[in-house]
Length: 326
Image 1 (cartoon, rainbow, N blue to C red):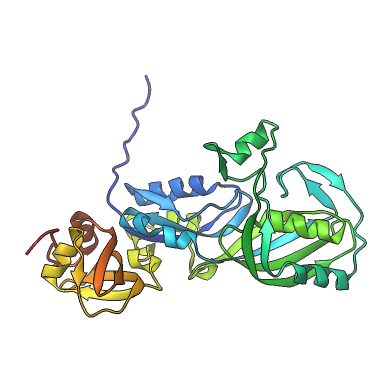
Image 2: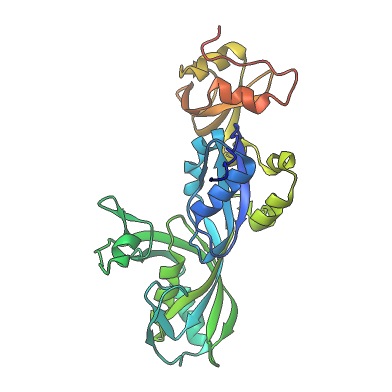
């Protein structure tokens, strides 16, 4: 007779968990583990990290999933080590070595090459990536032994700092800190640097130190989250509006707040603004995002009245804000 399985009771959870993703887990595996630990109903992440990579992985729960897109566009900072002299099938340590060349470059040449990768550059996305072609991820084609033509993408390397350099021995390497724009493939950057040095290279390690305003110092590991009593785990969540740090705050009174939640534009004396975080007053609660044009507050992504009430339910005096109230 099969043992009965205990059904996990899910609950509404709203906020952002700053996870320090461990080595070996995919972003989705880390998300599912955190979702299970929090017993959350709905969750998503703000961009993936490869299993080889560790570091900052913001996870969005409940209403926070509505505001993940601006964070996908944020700049990122990584620390990576390039193993010089070896090229692999995946441009990282997970792949098989397909070419070995001697490392004969000088320290001066390394500095010159790194300088040449500063600023706007073009990259051809790697085959081992989640980028899709005809609805199918490139890594799926790669596993089938196929190489698909990819268009070069324009990215920006804001800073490229040399942290350590070893050009001799059995495992010559460079350790770099990379501050870059969205869409930058660090594996491709490492491989391109290796080619420019004439010896080839692949990533032996990769850690994301920062994404947007979120830094590794503010993150929690899965082990630390699991060690907390179940009722205390949600205390590690940041508020939903932590995803909107650069948005201008606009507060609406009750009547205008209700109409705004119904998707109705509101008029006011606001200047034109591209990014606005809209709040209700009494109780103070995030209603959603918007932009202002010609004095009109135009709704963007909105929370539902139920989501707002769930976020406020820890406040005994909270009063529900109902869409369309007058």
